[in-house]
Length: 132
Image (tube, rainbow, N blue to C red; front, side, top):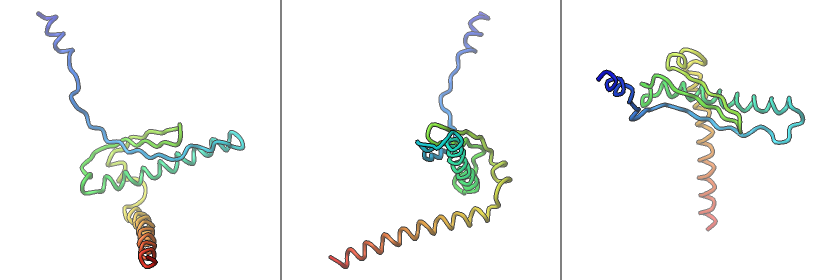
């Protein structure tokens, strides 16, 4: 009887699991580097850019109304075949790095760039309509 209890206790499995992951993909390093140092510098640069963008996105995610109740997240920065994984908690992400106002200013600059592109598209469409 004791053996059957032990067997029953050993049989368990996970029905579901939810893991929050953010990915940032960057271009692979240069295909024709001058030397090994240039190749390594290209990898470090691309992974650094991806990591910095992930940290900004993580901060925004933890400060958002919709996803602000999340406690932790995994970050995966990828540049070609190279990758880097980080684990961040809400406390770490919101207490370190730039101030929230600086992130808001960066987001506004990014949004202005998107808005300008949309305005250019609208102008081109209007010019096409006028020509026809």
